[in-house]
Image 1 (cartoon, rainbow, N blue to C red):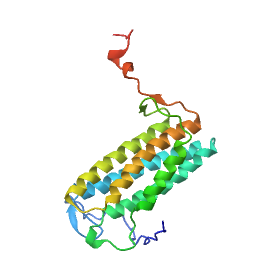
Image 2: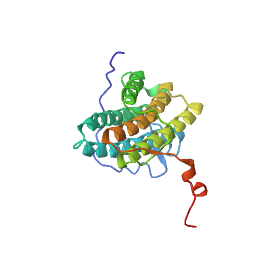
Image 3: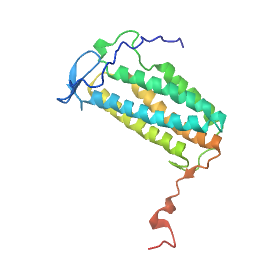
Image 4: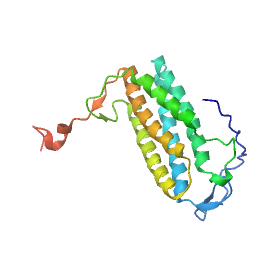
Length: 213
């Protein structure tokens, strides 16, 4: 696949508040004013939320990589994903008629990269015999938070696509990313030597003998 060169940001942030959103509206990149709770705003707002959680996970894995250098690979991947999520937000914040040829976006290249990374890391992992409970370690839990927020972003994008025009690659990227976050959570635990916590249905209160009550 050929490389895509995107336009550099054309913004100048001199102050944070503008008061233009005080009536519950915001502007798309083409200048259109729409309600802040519109589906398109909900879509790229959730992508922004996801980006923040990925940043938290990246900070954690960067700290852990001091003791376990193999984790530095994941830190670099998460940083790239943050750039991709910002590109995706720009994509969603633009109506099709306003889209520029070299405007930042996600493409099939990003989807293929996620698939390749999943396949490579999955080779090191033992097969699962049950579902994984988030929280085997702090990083594991953070990556699962990212995964679930990503799934929510995907659901919102699917709903948006029913009423408005968005590129199908948006949903594909979010779908692959949520899968990748699951694989990365397992891989990070494997590299760090942290046991995974597997779902055991009979660990529920109703399935345990000798409970306190």
